[in-house]
Amino acid sequence: MSAVALPVSSGTRRVRATHEAAWVRVTLIAVALAFLTLFLFVPLIAIFYEALKKGVDVYVAAITDPDAVAAIKLTLTAAAIAVPLNLIFGVAAAWAIAKFEFRGKNLLTTLIDLPFAVSPVVSGLIYVLIFGLQGWLGPWLAQHDIKIIFAVSGIVLATIFVTVPFIARELIPLMQAQGTEEEEAAVVLGANGWQTFFRVTLPNIKWGLLYGTILCNARAMGEFGAVSVVSGHIRGMTNTLPLHVEILYNEYNFAAAFAVASLLALLALVTLALKTFVESSNKQHKENAGEH
Amino acid sequence: MSTFKQHSVLPGFNLALGFTLIYLSLIVLIPLSAAFIRTFELTWAEFWAVVTSPRVVASYRLTFGASFAAALVNAAFGLLVAWVLVRYRFPGKKMVDAMVDLPFALPTAVAGIALTAIYAGNGWIGQFLEPLGIKIAFTPIGIFVALTFIGLPFVVRTVQPVLEDIESELEEAAAMLGANRLQTFSRIILPTVFPALMTGFALAFARAIGEYGSVIFIAGNMPMISEITPLLIITKLEQYDYAGATALAVVMLVISFVLLLIINLLQWWGRRRSASA
Image 1 (tube, rainbow over the protein chains, first blue to last red):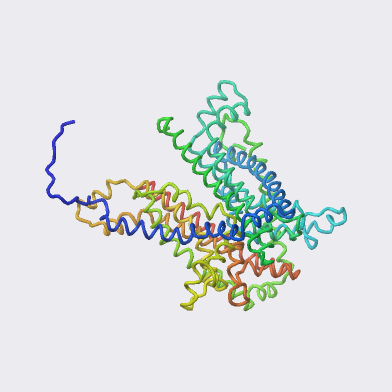
Image 2 (cartoon, each protein chain N blue to C red; image 1 turned 45 degrees about the vertical axis):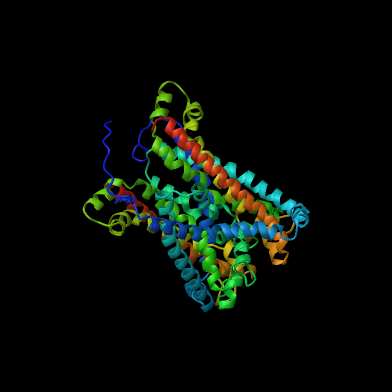
């Protein structure tokens, strides 16, 4: 490196032609942050402020109330069923779509995304049309004393529906980008299908899988519209946390509503923190691998 | 078989595809088709009467109008936020970047009551607007606010990666040829991110149309004025008007499918653009 010092023409710092002037930069940053403050940070702070406004005692009472505890349990149950099922689905769908060439692949990929396009209310309604008293299977279910709508199984079904695409759509592009060479090498060297998957594919996709699972879980625990339609809102029985928030709010029990809501807001913050961690780990992993 | 699937040495295709198809059919496709099949219980005239009644038409106008306005605001500010996050450095940038996804992670009901608390007449922001005669909570403007919140991440997250990929050579060439920054932005940068911007707009719009949880708390839910279409479906369901609820659901499903198609076309356009560049 030759150290030729270029003469600096004047004392003022020159703006590079591919950069904006300082005042433009500062203005743009300020406007963007003002918008985000108004729409993101103020609502987030408001949740915790309203939750604690009447004191810690009221807060603790609200989240340890038996109905609230029942709602927490139901929310955890629904997520504990929906997330693993959609995890298996996501891996199976990604294996078929990313590792093989077959007709109708694009159509299948679009169909997996369908639940994202459907209004949550419609997602709940379609299960009422099948399992409700007026539904296709309604009379048969009533005869056998099986309840799906206004019961826990309906809530689980609706939760599964709205979270179907999360893990699949995270894995498909990832596995497509990774190609099939490593797996083919494993098979040629004598590994069977499961060995290939667990020893070759899984280590390659673990960050994507974790990322999808985190997002899937957040939505599973937070879903409101679809679950609301099939729940029947029976306190202590078919109330998930978001539905419990609604009931408390509609009873003008605002402090308790925000207290329960703050649990869900904490869940959202933990989700975002995990997501950021996974993203940066993934980036490091890629850089360590020397850009592919 | 050979025309359906190309040969591969990898195992597990039949198992994986079979499971995928069965699961998707049971959970998604058969239930969705139920909505379409159930509408056949109505005659065409009855169906048309339900989906074009004045209260329903007012709800479409509100749902689409508020969703469009919210998506438009998100397109403008989303582009700005993406730009600031990609191009500039400022304290707390990493945290701000992570927080952009808050509307994806925060349950909609929680967002709904938080926004209502802020924009109500005695709320943090509402108390300053009320003396000016501006009411936000319990009016259509409140719906617009909730939908803006819900759609915020879409434009940022679709535009951000495209902005990151823009080669600085292009901008340097533009500067060398005498373009100022505004010209470079409008002639070089904006056309490059435009497909992504449109995709983000369409995603935010599609999400807003179906949104329920955040809206019902802040809307006031007055028939003809502040009642969104998804709420009307619930109202009909609670009155045991299954046929009416299903008819509205089918209208919303058809709109969702059309939007999904448009979004896929936009993404394909964006990929082709970046491939040819």
